Amino acid sequence: MIELVSYGAFFLTLALTFAIMCLGLNVQWGQTGLFNVGVAGFVGIGAYVSALVTTPDLPERLGGFGWPIAVGWLAAALAGAVAAALLGALTIRLRADYLAIATFGFAVVVQLCVLNLQSVTGGPFGISFIPRPFGALAGDPLIFGLLNLAVVAAVTLGVYAALEHLTRSPWGRVLRAIREDEQAATALGKNAISFRLQAFAMGGAIMGLAGAVQGHFIGYISPEAYVPILTFQVWAMLIVGGSGNNRGAILGAIVVWAFWAASGALIAAIVPPEEQARASALKIVMIGLAICLVLLLRPRGLLGELKTVSRHVDDGKDAKT
Amino acid sequence: MMAQTIMNGLIAGSMIGLGAVGITLTYSILRFANFAHGDMISWAAYFALAVSTALGTALPGLATPVGPFSFGWSLPLGLIASIALTGLLTLLVDWLLFGKLRQRGGAVIILVMAGFGAALSLRSFLEFVFSSRPTYFTDALQIALPLFAGVRATADQMLGLGIAVVLVALVHAALTRTAAGRAMRAVSENQALAGLTGVDVSQTIRLAWLFGAALAAVAGVMAGVLVQIRPHMGHDLLLPLFAAAILGGIGSVPGAMVAGLIIGLSEALCVQFVGAEWRAAVSFVVLVAILLLRPQGLFGKQIP
Image (cartoon, rainbow over the protein chains, first blue to last red):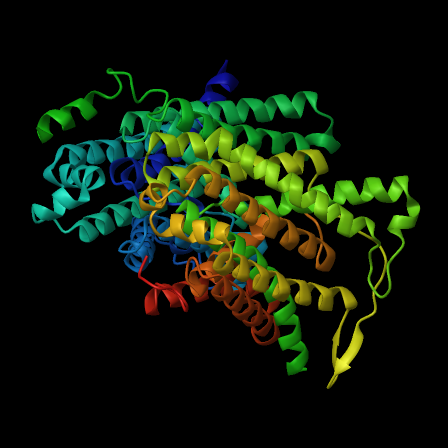
């Protein structure tokens, strides 16, 4: 029983870290229509910045300031925002798909830097001994797991509440107006490029924060965690959950992560070890097919159409008219 | 030493250029960045591998290397089959996915996203069928021949370079000199207006897909001969391909080839002077520079 509860807490904590990434993507794509194919890059930057700021000083590695975890999380969000703002400033005034190509390249470069800048990032070995919240209580897995769940849930709720507030605010209305009809919004005196840039930077900040929260929960980060698959997972979560809907983003993250974890466990149980790499390739085929199928059959996402889930979307519409 | 670096860069660049010509064609006519193009390159290589292996097993004479090359006649035959099969695959994907989304008339970015999902599925399916272990068309060893001033290249590499240049000239001629090419350019300038003047738009879109697929097939087989065949080979090429297409100017065929050569050269210089581990970053640096300085590309007409 206790094992079940602590596994449940572990699963939910990890799922919520994905939910935070998904909320960040929702600001960019769901609210503003900006296509980011480099989610893994922003998450990775956040995780590494926070790890560098909070880990104790090490002789063989640069950094390690030993600062409190909260400072690391703030630094991670800031780094994500700066990276997104720079990349956005470069491409947002050009064609929509240039941003996609640039973010794709950005993720490749982040991966390369993390792998090659060994004196800063630990290279392929990653960074271990990242301080974990309530690390002193790690002896009792149940209490430790539940406390961590509470922390991550609080961060998720905080981001959710802030985004809900922003969605209803005049700022959120401008974003949706630009997404729906840029010319009309510009004619009303709104600077579309500046608003897009703000939304993109905010999404980057939330992804950076998510990376930091996840890194501190696991206590260890390495380059393999920030490969393109992560980007695909977060996209699948948002599209399945219903883009444009913050609750959908959170629910999508939990549902897709549950499917991912369950199919992983199933493959581990029934497929012989030498075939497992191939079987998990099939798992990724499914994620890609799911993205395409939802786009074709249910573009608003599985939950986006339900009134109970998308209540605030209706509010937004009322406010606009 | 320097001359050899430039030679290596040109050989890799001609491969990038071929892929980039395919990207720039489909981009300018279909009006979206197709993230699945890289995976078409991988599929093409595996199609050619399957056909040439089957031919080589059935008729061993076809597998014996021809002249100075590392492969027998089974490979060119495999390439022809691969052009047809890759063409069918792109038409299938268009019919199942992109065509339906186009009909709905949604935003461009939905097409980009669908391509992204399709790319993921296509790539992982290859990995499922063939596993991620690299393979080769032949296991024949090739000795690099001395050319001039201490520069060496294998016969395969010289053939690849030649094919790339000839193909680009042919595609450029087809676009500028034939009726179908004029129709393609008309559709890329203004789809509605082209339709009004009697151009069959959906036929032209299919033709653009087929052109892109054929170029992807050649690029894939060439990459398979010169480097190796892996399910991720096309995906790893995608960033250089996009960078070359934008650097050359979207829609410009000679521009894409020249830009491909520039990227190949920059990568070779990076490997020589900075370190092989940073090679993948070169395309991003080029991309950032071109977006900052001249977003319409070297040979592009207007700001996209």
